[in-house]
Image (cartoon, rainbow, N blue to C red; front, top):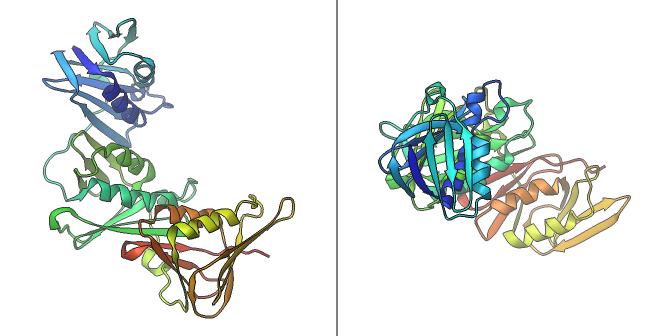
Length: 367
């Protein structure tokens, strides 16, 4: 096996594949990436037995085909620290030689036959989504997924199809984000098929989409999801568990409504939170016909008051929210204007950024 690679392209491929390979495992083979050199490309495969990836690097000059298995972190570090524009990878026996203009590294390899199979994309996709559309859906939902492992079904994003629309939903029990996007070319997939895709998987998918205009092919099975781009195929197990009935969580009746500029409200919430701490992280929001007043108080630091001009309809109301939860949503809204609907101080708020982004946020007790 011998191949000459563009160092930048190789580094990107190894960086993505390296996030899949398992750093802590009783199986050393899972700490490796499999390198396969064919007629016109270098394919890098990695798996942790839950997520698997095949990434193709075509910015190569193939001199001899072959395959080998090498420690992912060692190869990645060598390529990252190299100063050469191109690197030569050549297999001799049980050693992989990595050569630059002034460098020569030898890494011991393992038997590629011992590496678990990493599937390629076969057959037709269930549906396709434009790259930038999928990246937007991921950014508008993934932040709301639970970080703690105690609520396993909440550690991913619910994905479903209705008609010609892809719907993604995430929640951690204190907030819920829902985003909708169109399928490509009027594709109409079979409705339903609720699938919980792990957060790690969607983070990888976001990194894989290098061309926002290219289609991403998606295939769902009973226990796996497969994403396919021009460069890569990513296969992942789905999360087992019961996702809450998200449509029941979204408030149906609200008698108070604020309309405001997205960027202006984001700035106001950020400034009102400057004196909060982990112990006093709530911001008081007072809505009146005159506008919105945001205030926070920290016994050890001081007080903050922000007067924000906006349009508000309905009875006056005072309610507390976690400012981080507000800014998380406002940062991913892709409309210039948002609406924020309320019913009562002890009921969740409903933030909308156009027809495709809905965010439910639970209030916090400020007393």
